[in-house]
Image (cartoon, rainbow, N blue to C red; front, top):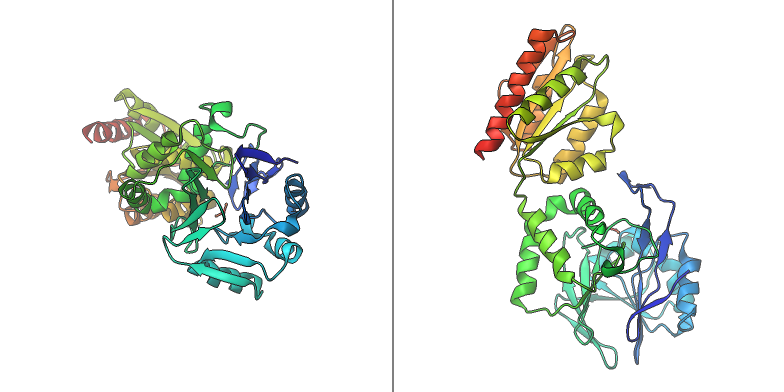
Length: 395
Ligand code: FEO
């Protein structure tokens, strides 16, 4: 339960989801928040709602400031259900005739999703809405990260209501960057790696555009996690850096194993990479969450993937991480494949095909070992790792 004034007449009335641990396949070990923002001016405006199931908390939070029935305008920056799930109840409560502002794609998506005839106002990019002493500007941010996504900017308060962008899955009573401290950056990085990495070129263009139009930003209010009020430039610069995808001198060796042979290979390859002065780490897939692996992928130069051959195919968890990785479109990577096998040994070829499809620069040939690697086999893995390490050092 909270309603916190973040600027004069502007409140965060969102809710904390302490217990969510799986956000559509993304591990949220610190829970999350669904932020929603109330602006009390001549017109009373609510920006975004919260996930279905939290609507009573949202109404309660608003009630601490004003009777929710006095809300004049609803703004939906994004259709995804963690922000729109409470719309039916909120619209019913405040009055179905109240205007609902959203992007043109938002209008289409909300109408298709909820099958409700709300009083939609599909806005143009740059359109303004006067609410009394303030003017709100709508900025289309298509595909960041849905077709309907938009920002709402308040020039008088210099606040950017940024929807999912600049968010973090982090539940806490700390509501601001200066309260939570630098630890929040690891959550922001994970969020970027798992939700926004594939849109990196668009993010760079957006940041450029924001600079060109001279948007003066003193506070960024995302829909998840903390609000950036002390140093909003810090998260903008971090987004620019992550979007450029300039990797560090780092390799990750991601693998699964049936009877520890591929594990032995992974550890020997990692040691070989490390012997070339490159940071390296074996990551056992079933001991790590795919969303944490993707966070490691973001700034790694070499992605080395290993799998035993199972029924002429990849081990299923290896297919899982490759599929997930491919969708997030990491760039500027070196790829390499390895694996142990009993008789047919297709895994290395299959991994290589996946990494090539991601346009990685491949270290060929991959490393295959039949049955258990002996000391010569481990020495070969070590040398394979050194080869990868030297390739990282060259770039
Ligand atoms: Fe937080 Fe795209 O929803």
